[in-house]
Length: 280
Ligand SMILES: Cc1cc2nc3c(=O)[nH]c(=O)nc-3n(C[C@H](O)[C@H](O)[C@H](O)COP(=O)(O)O)c2cc1C
Image (cartoon, rainbow, N blue to C red; front, side, top):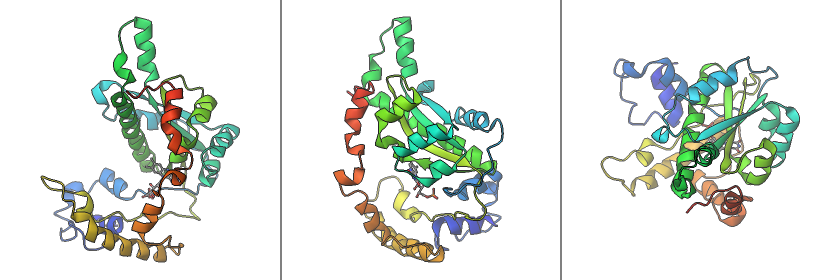
């Protein structure tokens, strides 16, 4: 597939800011990395093959290659393959079939425990760890690391899907994984070979005009972009023979309607306090 075709698939449209460029003009980006990035799709159906030996270690090497705030490296990952442990994690993550189906489940940890333990052992002040800033840094670090790992896995022919459901019951998850205080399971990630009988498609994204601003944020840009995206997503669901959940904007807002829609995560701050995060 040409790069132009991949870009069209990413935007679900032939009308995006890169559409007028020729393959020659795009040639600097015609490489394996960019090609792989454009092909990302969440995989929720896996075949029965185990992931090859060393997959986790290769993914973690990619993860550890990501930038990390101040070289703090405030993240960890727990690799789970035991079906019973996976089932227990799934029971508190919304019973998602992909968690049962995947041979490898990675839980990405925003980890301030390591630096806290260092501070205690070395008996030096480390009060900055009690601030919201440190929690944010740890979650940013974990996200960047995980995404590098995801890209590496996809380049090796594996499929992944992130699992935010792991945040439904942070204290149960912490206990299951033996997490020390000041660490938090930010999200999970199913990893495995995509089931060729149930292939996933590239899901179009918002028109670039909604997300790319020049010099200053343009709050007016989202409106027409969103209307356009409603049409693009309706077409996508029809093409995929999937039930349309309704217009993207209203469907998205329905998932943000308030406390009920958070399905347990409305208590996150309380759970985080119990897990040793002061969030000053
Ligand atoms: C932090 C995060 C949490 C997510 N949690 C879930 C989840 O619990 N279950 C799920 O099926 N997909 C989950 N996803 C996948 C998104 O639904 C998916 O990335 C999005 O719909 C875009 O689709 P695509 O990845 O196929 O492009 C999550 C994605 C992210 C980044």
